[in-house]
Image 1 (cartoon, protein in one colour):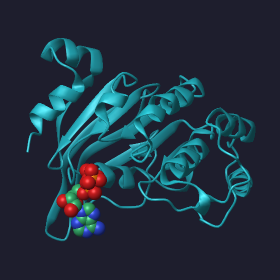
Image 2 (spheres, protein in one colour):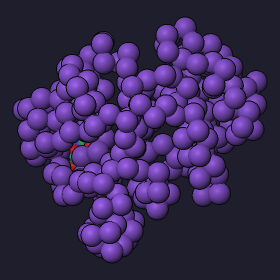
Image 3 (tube, rainbow, N blue to C red):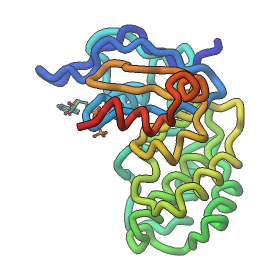
Amino acid sequence: MNNIVKFKNVYKKYGSIDALKGINLNIPKGKIVGLLGPNGSGKTTMIKIMNGLLTTTEGEVLINGMKPGIETKKIVSYLPERTYLNDWMKVKDIIDFFKDFYEDFDEIKALQMLRTLEIDENRRLKTLSKGTKEKVQLILVMARKADLYILDEPIGGVDPAARSFILDTILKNFDENSTLLIATHLISEIENICDEVIFLAYGEIALQGNVDEIRAEKQKSIDALFREEFRC
Ligand SMILES: Nc1ncnc2c1ncn2[C@@H]1O[C@H](COP(=O)(O)OP(=O)(O)OP(=O)(O)O)[C@@H](O)[C@H]1O
C-alpha cells in the first residue's frame, strides 16, 4: 500500500454548514505535505476525521488502509490545534506520561530536542511562554516513531527567528519513511520543506501537487500563489 491517507468522496456537514464537499485525496508514504487554505476552508475538519474525532457525513477515510480508530492511533502522532496537556505538569512529567502512554515514544530523542531548543525540562508548562509551550508539544509529538505525523497549526505562536530552527530540528529527527502532514497559514516558512501541497477552499480541493512542479508551472512561490488565489 503506497498511500498512507485516502479520502474517498468525503462530505462533512455541521447542521446546515457544508464543511467538506466531496474530498478525494491520496497522500503517499514518505512525503511532507502542506495542507493550506484560508480560515474556515475545512483543514481542521479533515484532520479531526483522520484522527477519528469526527465522523464523515458521507464517504470514507482510510489511514494505511484502516478506518480511523484504536489501530490507527498507534501509527498516527497528532498535534491538535489546541493543547490538551495539563498546565501544572513539569515538562519532564509530561515526558514520563508520553513514555507510559505511547510504546513508540523515544524519550532520548525528546530530551535531545528539548536541549537543542534550550528548554528546561524542570519547568512547569504554565510558567512557559505560549511559543515555548508550542515547542514542547511539537517535540512530544515528533518524538514518537509514527508512520504519520499530523500537525494542526504547529508553530503559529513561535517567533519567526525560531521557526526555521524548529523546522530544521524536526526534519533532522524525522524518518524519511514517515509521512508528515502540516496544516498551516505560515506558507513561506514551510514551502521549502514540503514535497507536496494541498490547497483547500470552501471545503473542496482547489489545487494539489508537487511543490517544485507547481512553482515551475505557475512561475511563483507557493506563498505568492496562495496570496493571489485567496486575496480578500
Ligand atoms: N463544531 C462545529 N459546528 C459548526 N460548524 C463548524 C464546527 N466546526 C467547524 N465548523 C465550520 O466548518 C467549516 C470548516 O471549519 P474548519 O475549522 O475545518 O476550517 P479550518 O480550515 O481549519 O479553519 P482555520 O484556518 O480558521 O482553523 C467552517 O465554516 C466552520 O465554521
